[in-house]
Length: 192
Length: 155
Image (tube, rainbow over all chains, first blue to last red; front, side):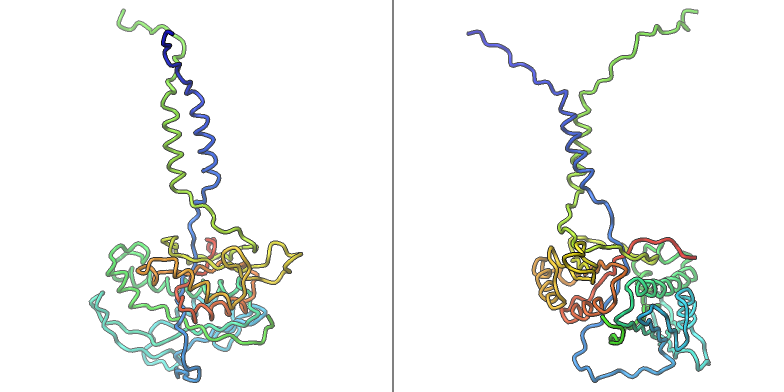
């Protein structure tokens, strides 16, 4: 028998097949990046009775009740006021008894000494508080701290905090402005 | 002026498409590599709250997820927010075990970098969230991330 040449395979539909697969992967791909507010929980307390005494002037109490109303340092307030109040509270006011104490600390990364406020923002929420409201408050507080970081960063390096690349500078700023938010144990009044 | 002789219109030449499959395959491989298939099917409704001060979660392999929200099948499970771990509903007591298992799945060197991402629906009450947080504290999973959408500035 005479040997016939192998017939050429028509590759014209190869592109179609590839397209089909491509479209499948295009559809199933999720490119979304997870974003959110990162927080660090305090390690569990071993002895519940052991309460650390913090002076009243060093604490800014933020309470959210089950109707999503805010109480900032004993006075009803709005979420929109929170940022300004938090920043005002955390800033240094020498000789003013109303504001938190501060002491001078050396920050090696920045190579300078800085007045560090001893203020703590205490966030307390009810069991009935909605998560939406809680995130709004967390967001405002985070925004206050980020603003302070930005301000310091611009003052020292002329760049915003988010634009900093040098790891040492970032660490220094983080050390100079620690996020001091404390979350209290929840209260049981709102109903589950 | 023969130099400026206009070209004769020969009619459109066929474009060589023989390399088209290659190009498509290249795209295909790109998407195949980048695709992360959803591991869990959500059983709870999730409408994440909006926030402006958000950070990106890096290293997805080091993130474990906890979902809390009202069940999709509200006729069957009610409208109260429930916790979903992996593919099933769970109770608060299951969280410590879940964290331990998640830790087991990772390399020993990576274990301390595990972040727990809390994907919680906005209408959820804080009671359940606080319970979960307390359990996470007990389990030693201290790095958490409140998952939010990027919202526009309110000002």
